[in-house]
Image (tube, rainbow, N blue to C red):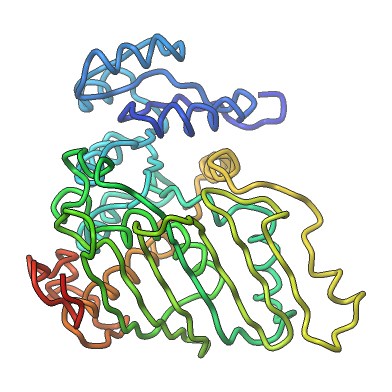
Length: 372
């Protein structure tokens, strides 16, 4: 390319709504840096139709055949969660970098196993958590690192969405073995990842959850109190039972409150910056973002391709990409056992490290004081 950046051959694995609705537009927005050369789906007719719609030359029903034939530089995994691990592993072992939709995989054990298939300089696997990449979140992250707003003290991280019974008629949804969990894993993970990218490492979680209204095996609501290494305390709520839907995060620092209220994506207009009384107007005005970049797949993919250019681990990968799955694991363990969980407990030998329901310990009846 004229600016010296590389061009990458891309394969999309899984041709459902997220592939056409988010990933194709993100690829098209990269100014020619990426081109889809192949798609894979177990449904051959759907794969062929997708390829025809978007002008992709090759479609397959078998991932290994595609990897051997087209040898893509980058594979984008858009399959149901239960097959993320196998798909990512196959792509890494074939030498392709991987960008995988959330949730990353179904356990910390699976996540850590995939890191063994990465190599210094690539290929690496990164995960889709686009809310980190809007200009407002970037600006807030810089201010927190610099201490510009004072110490982080109190936070709120609420994903209050609504999914009806028809939503769960898709066979893999609402089951531990195929979705990995309920709204904590499949919906709130985005806001929790944004929170963690801002506040850093957590220390302890105390949680409860229940299956209150949906006919599913997982929870449909969870509540947690989380303490951070900084000392900050945060309330986390994840729900698919909330008719007025909102994704809401609030961070109270010693000198300011910063909030974002949106649903599936934000720009600067969704954020509110409130200085402590007495903070000079000129200083508070300097906190605001100087650009307005919406959180999106587009902007995260651009950064991912930059990492490929440099042969460096991308953001939301490795230990950085593990944070949200760690917190979810701790939240489930606390809710199911009724005990607080320290981050240091989440290691091999812990049943929740291998399975998010602790090996079938979440079942009908009473869970941490919540009755179905």
